[in-house]
Length: 141
Image 1 (spheres, helix red, strand yellow):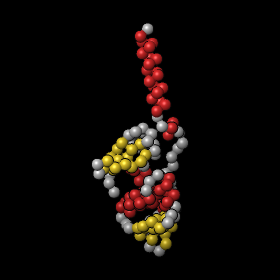
Image 2 (spheres, rainbow, N blue to C red):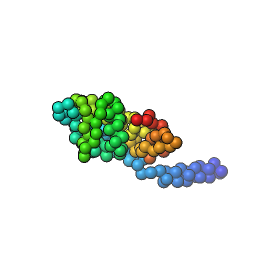
Image 3 (tube, rainbow, N blue to C red):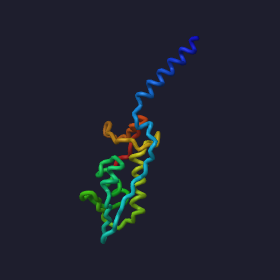
Image 4 (cartoon, one colour):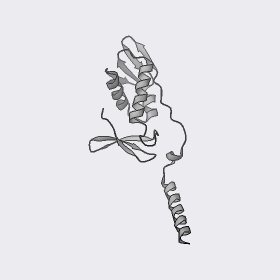
């Protein structure tokens, strides 16, 4: 008879644990990596929807830009909703780098969900997942 009570206690504890999980854990919507729409004007590349891309990724535009500039080996800045990069880069190259950013700085390394934030702990940037609670150190930019 004690085995039945243990099982009932376990079920009750399990139900309590499920109630404490955030709602984002149970959402099944699929995350799509945003595409950057770029045009080349002279010797510059302009990403027209840069602020939308950053907002979709839930990241600071300066952080995303810093990554792109480092990966592309160029300089650039943000003007309004767009990013201006020095040099000619095709939209394939830019979108490939945005995907790399998502893989490194957005997606959780444990549960593969985009519900993450970047926090700073003892001079180390950490990726903290809101869905599963995992933490992982990030390579600094």
